[in-house]
Amino acid sequence: MAATMAKRGGAARPLQAEPNVIPFIDVLLVLLVIFMVTAPKPTVDLQLELPNRSTPAPVTIPPTIVDLRAVDGGYGLYIGEDAYTLDALAGAVTARALAVNAALTEADARADARIYVRAQDQGVAYGAVVAVLDALQHAGFEEVGLFAQTAEEGA
Image (tube, rainbow, N blue to C red; front, side, top):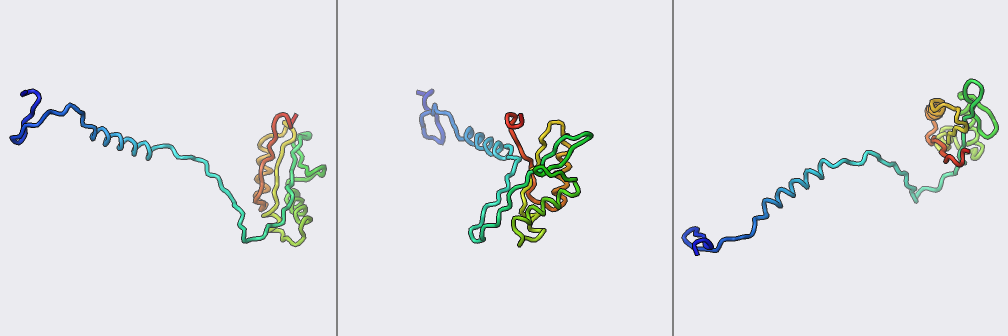
């Protein structure tokens, strides 16, 4: 009977065979907090421009596709079948946007025009595509992107 009873404060009470799990739970909660704080956060932020119902729909300007084609000693810039230099490209895209809506100002046309740059030939260097993108963005165009196509479309 001495093995099954413990004396504390003068009163005899039975020994407990159950483990004390409170320290174990405390350790688990601390580890959970540490892992939650140190967990990697997403590094890619997507910017969304949601439409506002109170403003009227803007006049949509059809997108302009600028093709880069390999020519002797470099590349040529084409919109449709018309060839342009890098300096004249911004003016040509602005003129196409103003032709859709003559009420637009030149600044509005450059802000609303969508331009997609596409390298039609594999011989065009990636640096040339980046140079065209950079020149269009420096000219004030806000909606400039790459025209992507699958391998089957390019073949």
